Length: 221
Image 1: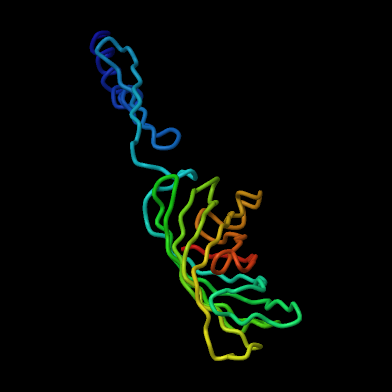
Image 2: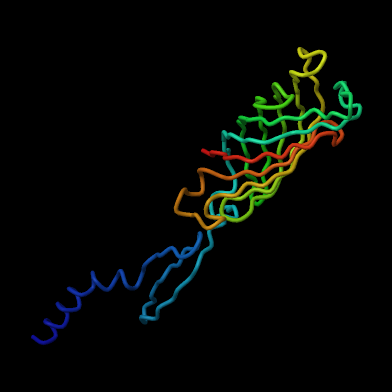
């Protein structure tokens, strides 16, 4: 009788003991731990690493990230031959403040990225009427959502205070910049990994014959 009771108790406890002997748990970023027990009751834990490529912020390393943005800044042009722009008398330099809209796409490639961007800017004071152009971007991904990049493209500029105000002057453009997300500057509660980023950028027109600092907000999707 005692043997029958012991066997029945062991059978009743078996369904509760099995999960303790064999279970899977995910720990950390992409690590799977498996716990099993052999016939003698010895516990064995093994780990399997998820080999999916990851970006610095832990998200997937590859994909397509479109974005739009609004920036403000100022540009001054040198008083020398520059894509046909007329040299002004009395040592006057063409310059002006502007508001710029951008739209583009980033392609993350692990710790780096490439992308393309178009822009249109409207002068709000000074000599510049309009600017527009396109550029390729490339650089590093840093922190939770940061970017450090360079850019090369082509830009057109129109002035409203030169002899031929209907002409668009055009040349290559070059720039460098950084983008930081809220978490990178201690404001992680505002948005997640995809969302608003702050951009600081410096550009030049033709062979470093203008100086254009810009700052603004970029919204990623």
